[in-house]
Image (cartoon, rainbow, N blue to C red; front, side, top):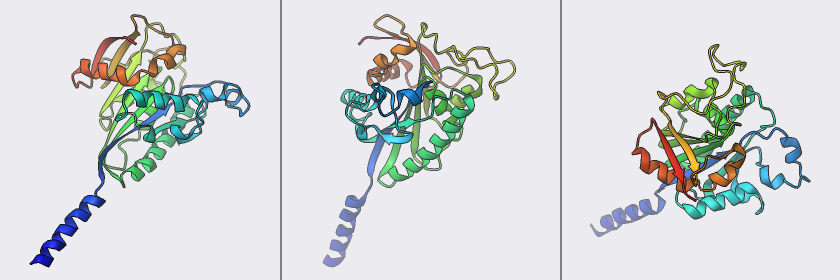
Length: 273
């Protein structure tokens, strides 16, 4: 009887030791378009550290200490270490010097395949995964093309998408309605003319009746949380995005308080730094 009890007890504790950790949040950051990426990203370029992201998925913490994406991951971690753990903060580098929408579509498919592989690895150690995809400018359209392939093959993954100043285009707009994604947020600023300047009328996949220029906002019927954002009482330009996204954890905390768990709503937010 004693031996049987000890055996059961040993099995129980071994199970505890070998059990998976409960949950983890992975962040993947997708940069926007760099029309002269080959020049900016050259090894001898003095501003390489400000723009460079290794092609494909890479851990930001493995970049040199003066690189923007490594510094960004540290900044976000300090604001919310649980949600933005630097040990699982990735960048996705893509060939953004080609501004064709077909390129963003191809990169979206590559991102999806890379994420499937990444998630399979994490599922070996975690019961539940939250995947946060953050896209700045046209990086957001790479993400929308990615989620068009969802759901992921792996289970128990909650996916949220944050689009920041992303040009809203008819060729990718409807992907926000994919119910495999838990929630999508889209931030825009009234003074950001760069968000709208990309012509979508002649895109191969664009409907005939689509607007000539890109838009700032999705349709009110789309399943997306839209945030008209000011910072310290002012709207901001596209070029100022880095001075704003560094506050993302704090901004998201305020957004989530305002939306009351809704996934289709349009709000105004004046964030105070």
